[in-house]
Length: 103
Image (cartoon, rainbow, N blue to C red; front, side):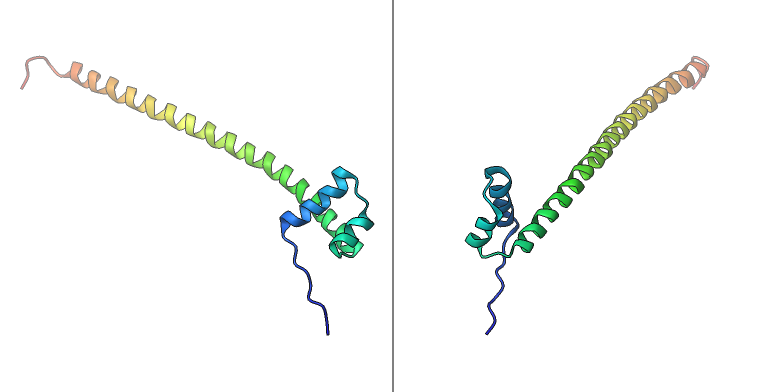
């Protein structure tokens, strides 16, 4: 009868990898403790580094997008204010052009 595969959550995987990377626990010790094959551990490590690189690049793109959105909102507000001022000036202009005292 086959053994059931163990399912590790993302938090568990990170905790195991952290022990190796930060606390310098040997891979063999971690694999024995958690009943892992070393290839599984190294696959997790590879995925962690690949996803970390993607997250860093995504963050820089997101920050650029956020900056552009803020700039767009600022320019739209500035344009709306100019439209209001222009409307007021046009009203005054039309009022001044009408002959005084005419019904």
